[in-house]
Amino acid sequence: MNTHTEHHSDTREKAQSVYIYALIGFVLCAGLALGWWRAQTKLATANEKYTTEVGDLSTKLGEKELENKTLSEALYSEQKKNEDLEDQIDDIADTVGMLEKLSKTDPELLQKYSKVYFLNEHYSPPSFKEIEKQYRYPEVEAENIHSKVWPFLEDLMEEADNDNVDLRIISAFRSFGEQTTLKSSYSVVYGAGTANQFSADQGYSEHQLGTTVDFSTVATNGALDGFNVTPAYTWLLANAYKYGFVLSYPENNTYYQFEPWHWRFVGLDLAKDLHREKEYFYDMDQRDIDTYLVSIFDR
Image (cartoon, rainbow, N blue to C red; front, side, top):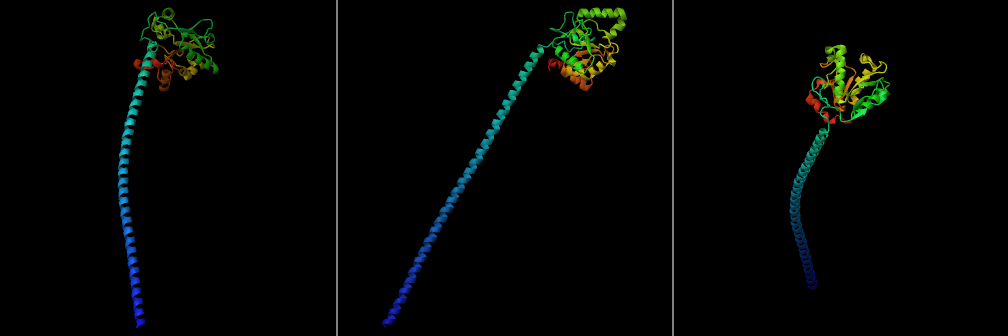
């Protein structure tokens, strides 16, 4: 009896222990589940909060980027306006400078004087330079040139000398009075009709500008006839434009007979353009020629 009772008591105690352990396990599991659920809830809430904050930040960032883009475009626009304004100011300054430069440049220098425009008897260049005697023929006779043309002419003569070309200047500036005397003597010797074919009347000669020279050679004793078959003429055709000089009266021109010796300074820009286009000074419209006046002495 006691043994049975003890056995029954042990079984009940074991059952109670199992129940208690099961209850404890359930409580622990429930606690863990509740903790996990709370953690997940907090995590979801935090994630939602962070997602919202990130979205807000992204929106603000987009707004800032748009604002920055707008500001950058506005800044670029202002910079462009400033650059345009600077360009306009520079253009105005250049224009003013060109106008001032042009106002100080003799407007007669690029006019078509041969039978077209007229130089009065009082006209002469503002200043002269006597051509060095080693470049003249004969050396004993003085010849003058416009002082601003001289550096170009000197370079031409030096280069010809360096190339062993026999080239000399036999005539340069001639005043109104000197041209009158010369034309009269030609008219007496050759007759007025013939003289008009190769000699300008006073006031119509390019020589009065002080920018024109007649070339010849020592070998021909300064003669003009036959100059077109000399190495000097060939050299001038190939090189004179580099120094601003052009042939005024080529073959078949409508002003005078062919004058291979007669070369006029028109500036580097115009001379080079004429050479490139294979045109002659008197073939150009005067309005086009006038655009080169401002740069006539530029180097």
